[in-house]
Image (cartoon, rainbow, N blue to C red):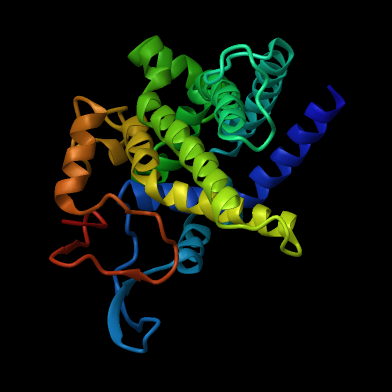
Length: 301
């Protein structure tokens, strides 16, 4: 229990520190571009039109809402992080105590470092993460909607409890789980890609007789995690868009945004438009080719 409390406190601190970055990323994901593109240079020194990066975007928000404005949606994110840490810890502990499920090898105990061991441990972690994601998703939805209110200057979602009442009154229980399926799929795929790929790299590409083997293996885990997150980023984007889609906010309604019947329709539309990586980068944001900047709506078409 003490370890869980420490993890929750550390997680809360990281959430507070990273919130301005997450806030700006969400606004970019939904397509809000309050500042027109400017002429700059890319990494190779060529002149290109670029979209404002993290710092320019942050200055714009501070100019309108002050420094406190960078922390919209922090309350529900803190609730989500704290509850998620507790749920993940409890479920993971249960899985370890029961020693199940074992996907490969039946009742035989898998040798540490084997593929069977990696699959079994990844399955337990998948169950723990999925449970935490399902339980905390309502707070995730509320946090996203609090952030997206910046676009239309609404105050519809003003607090955790008031927002819960608002969502339930307008959308029922299902409203709390908008965008859950792509989020779960992205989490599960990212976890499996990361762990299985790291296993094969550590087994077949790294010799145990090498010096600093443990550091190299940790590095490979970090690299595969980064690679897995890049591959599954479209799921994160679609999930966030569906969480705010058609929720009564300007940022999720026409003419600013389309109304998507399902997350698959959202995926197909983003794919056709070439926007599957929108918001993935906060620096060196190149102007989308073939797009027109609409000053009145502050987005690209």
